[in-house]
Image (tube, rainbow, N blue to C red; front, side):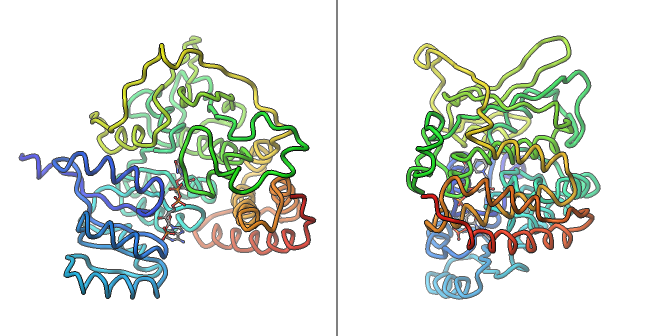
Length: 401
Ligand code: NDP
């Protein structure tokens, strides 16, 4: 077979975001291996137009129908070979196109659930960045991937590291024999050394200035509160079939060791690389082969010391909230995620203080009656109702910033 016949045909959901940009960088380095079928975003049609000019994909979708009309007019004006789709149906269509074998799920937030689930049911090879899919409906998603014949390749750097340290071909959702526990590393975010009093006054721009990673604003705030690590604990539970007590968080400020797997014999395997999303993306895009990611070699002598510490769960209560939600099960993780998205949105708009974020999450969790998640509709309903509750709490919350 020729190289072109072996090309992976790729759809990127969230193409205009930070993960989307890293994915496009890796894809553009290997035109012999990777080809774009579709790009999708929310409403930034000018950014999507730049990508359509550069990559000329056969399909592109925008959730926002007004933005899709502007985009379509520009695509026609410029004579680009791209068919434009719009709305939720448009996103679902690009997530399940028969022409594409691979879907990069990099939409931010709960909005990523429906198209990612559709891709799982359609049996795609899914490069999963959207952790919210697993947080909202982990059981449902793993089962959909299993029955749809989808292959899950995690690209969240920690989960990609764990994937690389586990035995090859370990099925998603099942803890491989011999594994004792998973150690999820966390940089500690930009506020790791701030006191509680200082945390009360931090601003959105400070929260988004991550010392090691360049990411979208929502996940940057999650990293600062450490809710990101909490959501990753839930993500690891579903992806690797480990119980709560078998997943531990370790602070590692250098962000060189991206996570570790401990085996029953005492061996601990780690994956190391520069903190650059192109490494996990290249690993998953080419899996089981390896390709260059454009990332410079790791010079350990230059890195010098690698340090580790236990997390401070008092200053960063979001980690504990995620463990609690995982223990409660059912809708609790979806409720936590919804409350967090509302609270982070309010913080970014300066309507809520930094320390109010965990308060709103804890309060929403405690007030929301737990229910089971047996369908996409159940997950979306829990998400909607929890958002409404959290919005009310956000409005009545005193501003500490
Ligand atoms: P960004 O905010 O940079 O980008 C988000 C993308 O999602 C944009 O393309 C945006 O489109 C699109 N989008 C937002 N809302 C919708 C919607 N309702 N429907 C369709 N598309 C939508 O996010 P990141 O790239 O930082 O993160 C993406 C996901 O990956 C998140 O789940 C995050 O937790 C995860 N992740 C990110 C990492 C990183 O390094 N950034 C690392 C590991 C995981 P538009 O531009 O039009 O708004």
